Structure formats: C-alpha cells, structure tokens
Length: 419
Ligand code: GDP
Ligand code: IMO
Ligand code: MG
Image 1 (cartoon, rainbow, N blue to C red):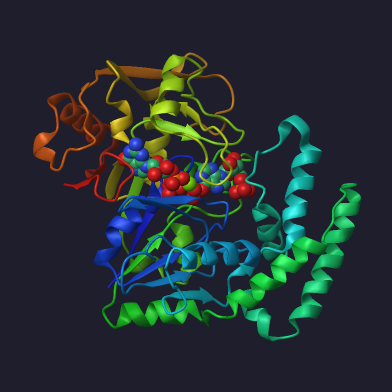
Image 2: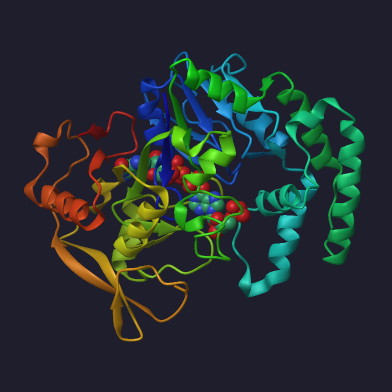
C-alpha cells in the first residue's frame, strides 16, 4: 500500500486536524512528518474539543497507531503537558503513540533563542509561535541537534554541551533569562517520553506498507509557510510540502498515494508576512468573527481575506494534489457576494503564476460570485447544497483543475460531506 498525505495549501490552520480525524478510520497508521508544537490542530466530536500540538490527529480513533516521525521537532515539556491533558480526559496513549528515534528535541534554550531572535528583529520580526522551532531546526541542519535516540547514550553530557553553546548565543543577544524552572519541566518531560515506545519509524512504516498496511501522513502548517516555497522569510523552518513527507518519514517518492490538499473557502494567516488578498474592512472582520479566527495555540487574531487561487494553483502544483478538501464554507453562508482572486496584477500586467516576491506591488484581480445565503451547517448530503454553492464548487474545480472530494460545514467531525 501507499502513504496518503494530507497537507495545508494556505498559511496553516486550514482544518487539517479535523479532516485527519475524519479520514483515520480508513488507515491503520497516522503519522506527523514535520513541524512541532507550533501546530495547533483542532478536533471536535461528541461535544468535546481538543487541540493537538505534537500528537497526530488520529489518536482519538480506536485501535490506530500514531507516529511522531523523524522530521518532527519535539519539546518534551509541552509533550508531557499534552499527554497529561489527554490522560485527564480518559485517553491513555502509551500503547498507540510511537516516537521516532530520529526526531529532534526542542531544548528550553531553543525557546529562549526564538524569543531573543524575534526581539532583535524589531518590526521585521517573523511573528513566530515562540516554540523554539527555528532554533531547533537550525541545530538539526548545523549538525548540533539532540535526537530522541540520544536519550539512551550520554544524554546529560550532550544536553549540557548544547546548552553551553546556546548560552553564548543568548549572551550575544543580551537576552536575560532564568533557565531553572524551564529545565525542570523539560527533564520531567523527558521522563514522560521514556514511557512511550521509541522506534526506528522509517523501518516500521516501510514494513507496514510492505505487508499491505495503509498510512495517512498529517502535514502541519501550510505550503505557503514552506521553508523553500513559502513567503520567505515569513515562513516556518521545515518543508511543509509533500516532499517533506518523504524526508520526514523515510519513504520513497513512489510510495506516495493520494495527496489531500486542504484549504479554507477564504484565506487566513497569523504572524507577519505578505498576504495579497488580506481584508482590512467589515468583510474581513465578519470572516474573523464568524470563522472564530483566533490562533489555536497562541490565541492571536488571524488575518483574514478572500480566497487566493493564484497561491492555491501554486501550492497544488508543488504538492501534486489529487483531491481537494474545502473547509469552513459555512463561514461564507451570510455573504451576498463572494470574491475569489483569480490573477495578480503586477506592474500593470496580469499573471496567474505566483511571483518571486509577493510582498509589494501585487493587485489582486477578483471575480465576484453570488453567495448562497443559506445556513449550510446542518446539511447531511450534497443533495441539499444550494445551487449557488454548487456553482462555487464547479468554479473552484475548473480554476484549480482538481476535484473537491470533501466539504466541511462546521467544526464537528459530523459536519463533513464526502463527495
Ligand atoms: P489546523 O491547524 O489545520 O488543524 O486548523 P486549526 O485547528 O488551527 O483551525 C481550524 C479551526 O476551524 C478550528 O477552530 C476548527 O475547529 C475550525 N473548523 C474546522 N473546520 C471547520 C468548518 O468547516 N467550519 C467551521 N466554522 N469551523 C471549522
Ligand atoms: P498549523 O499546523 C498557522 C506561522 C507563525 C509564523 C511562522 C513561523 O496549526 O496549521 P514558527 O513558530 O513556525 O517559527 O513560526 O509560521 N505558523 C503557523 N501559522 N498555523 C500553524 O500551524 C503555524 N505554525 C507556524 O505564525 O508566522
Ligand atoms: Mg492550527
């Protein structure tokens, strides 16, 4: 069997957690392949709401193995908090959550370095989640990182050496800090992690595939935050695109099956960086209010705007998307008119290709479509879809060249229509 991949096509928070949970019954294994606790994946079912950060979103479906893959960066202190939150809600994970030996650890000093770096940039700050993601991946690439597999060999010494190096950097930033309580929580987190099965995940996943098993790979962030192809430097520090699933799990490109590309029926972004279709008017505020667009991890208000088909065509191309998943169309229910950006005007010339630099001089070219103005949140089948909604779907499928396979009409697991 192959690995199906589900990933975000915009700037994150598209609703990946919800859809991974919905799709999990079709797979035996769910795996995260990049990012870390900068992610906040929300799931709602049976009147309960959970926000997962490092743990894959397949964890609530019975009898499934969930893997934190080698491409992920893990903060043991936050991991412990997350696990204990789920344990308190009656979910015991030790028999079904496995961790890759090759996943890198986020040290407490990585978090401090993230804060110090952001502060040093002033107005040019990236607006990171403050979880130490950039510094942890920097150490990985610089070949200074600590991995989960190191827990069992001279770990204290390796940790101390890393912290010494980080302290020099923090002094350079003239950043003041108190490491004592952070370190205490971190080492308690390490002990918690040791209760889990730590595996050679690349062997596990490939053997599972070879024996006919199926795997769903869960992306974090979104393609417009990809380190290579996103709106650099306002991006995250990993490859969020489909290629990241190969390197972040240890699977060959030919093992990729379906690629689910997930997007909101409009567009949002948190943190700094360009956003060509951003709205600063009442429509933007309505999207924020109706869509409850506040960060699941940091609580920051999300910037809102119209759907950007130039950016979507680009990310569909980069990811080889075979099925689209449209989220939060219910948020558009009250709009009389819906806009979609079909091209950019750059220096007076229209283009449908995403330019190298989208930070300045981009004028979105919009088409207007009639809204459906019907509450869709309780609809159970596509037979109930209003005519205007069907026209919107057909318009998107024609513009993007990929079928919309799933439509989400609300945050709950049950508010999902598979076409
Ligand atoms: P993720 O990071 O991609 O998993 O997405 P987040 O969980 O950060 O953000 C998506 C938000 O939208 C969460 O609060 C979800 O509960 C909510 N959500 C997901 N799908 C829908 C939907 O179809 N309609 C509405 N109104 N909310 C949704
Ligand atoms: P999920 O998986 C939305 C953004 C941050 C910042 C930039 C870099 O829930 O979709 P980082 O902490 O990664 O160094 O921050 O990336 N960002 C996200 N935005 N959803 C996320 O994850 C994000 N993870 C990081 O806001 O702009
Ligand atoms: Mg999120």
